[in-house]
Image (tube, rainbow, N blue to C red; front, side, top):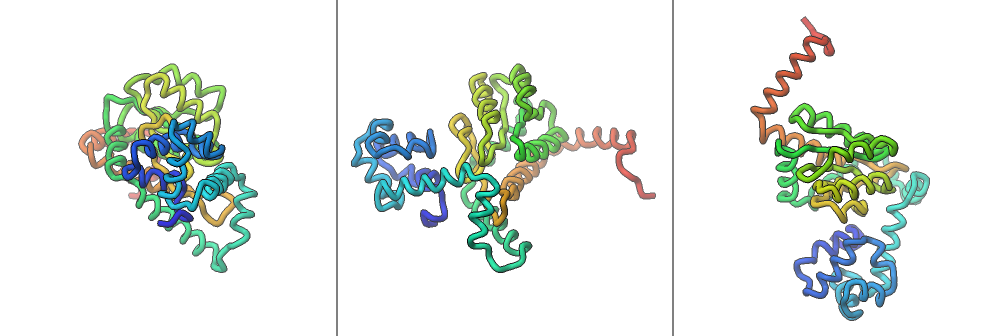
Length: 290
């Protein structure tokens, strides 16, 4: 894919194994504080990474840019996208909305998001996520933001049916610090954070990481700052012709994980589900057709 289709992060990460030692050192500096680290002068970036300015010039050319100015311009475009509010997103799409019915143009964009997301997901990394979720020795804490909290709740409700030891961390700033009391080494925090990245979710992840918990991040193609403390990051494509972003690619990853986990531990899941169904029958939650 060309540089217009992938983020700078994707381009650097894709070539990481082909870089020299000094270039890898530079790449790690760029990715650790992405995209801010690349917005200063070429000299400042070289000093941050402990490499020479010619090394910076060579690496940006390796990833497909004519030089440092073009590399920086791409980062600035991404930074603008990362902080865009709904009005700005609508203005961007409004300049070039396809002349098709909203059902078709939205479905096409969402489908492309899902396929491109899957293309960039490492199956080994995904299997590691499923292994974390299925491990009964781990306590799972799931959190999201103002809107991404709905994804966190969806995952929580399913995992709560599949296994014990799962908690949904509320997003209210005056409540979630209480949940940090129960997070420690051996636990996992699964965080959802997409543009415009929320300070409270970042702080929560940082505090959980400091307490020894492993962090798993579901984010967008530009990547939440939480990726700096996450051991596993899943970046889903979210842009669609709308003032709001799409969660369909992220939801696909969530549902794939749910399916994999329940299949990987079916006997325990079946026993737990049978118990839950008995409770449903007793409460009369669902209508019966006889």
